[in-house]
Amino acid sequence: MIFRSILLRNFCKKASLPRDNEPHYTFGRVWKLLFGRYLIVTNTVSSGVLMLAGDIAAQEIERRRQQKSSSTQIDGRRAFNMTLVGLSQGPLHHYLYKWMDMLLPGATVRTVLKKIAIDQFVISPIFIVTYLYSAGLLEGASVPECTAELRHKYWTIYTADWLVWPPTQFINFYLISPKYRVLYINAITMLYNVFLCYIKHNDDLVSLLIGESQSKNEPTGTSSTKENDKKNHT
Image (cartoon, rainbow, N blue to C red; front, side, top):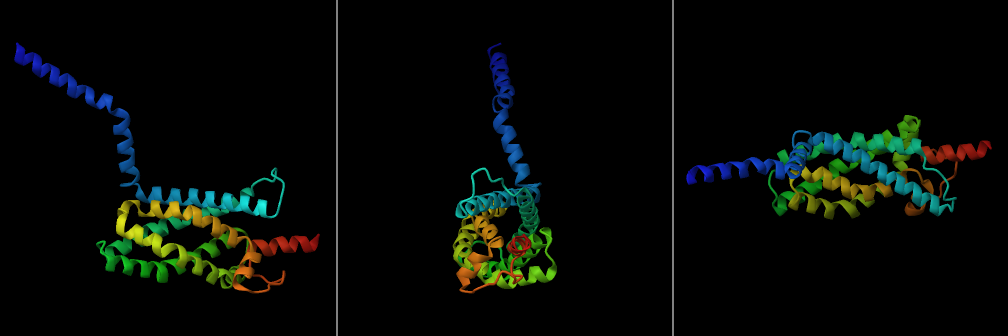
């Protein structure tokens, strides 16, 4: 009788465990799905959301720099376009990092340095080209205009890449688990996107950084050129 009561008590305890830990169990299951089976979806959506956050921050900086009224609304069309650009970059980063881990497995210092070299000399140029072309085309620019903007802004962005990403990627490849790498990069990218979105829509700053004097009629920036055209017509 005593033995039977002990078994019954243990059974009741075990039966109550899932119910007591149900929130933790559910969160753990969702987490495994997001960073397991649906990792590419997680990477894609987070890339788009963080690009959106970066563009909104960049627009706020522009508003304060130009001393515009606080009632000035966010450019929704521009924010939407930048979100689409971010969504397009998510799968690209997902598969590039997956390919890199297959090409160079392990996390030794030598392997990490090789990955950083590939990232800076291969992935970074691909990202800059796809970023400027996709953002420009979404804003209604022609391919020649996107090419002119790429020539004007490429080295400014690429120089900034060298200042930001090598130390960031060393931490990424040496310490971060592969399934969290794109999420980690996206978190850093949220801050970097503020710079990217600002550079994308402000030719004057690029000219200042590279020491060039640019006339308003030069087709070096898709957004800024259109704004100048509107001013000239008015």
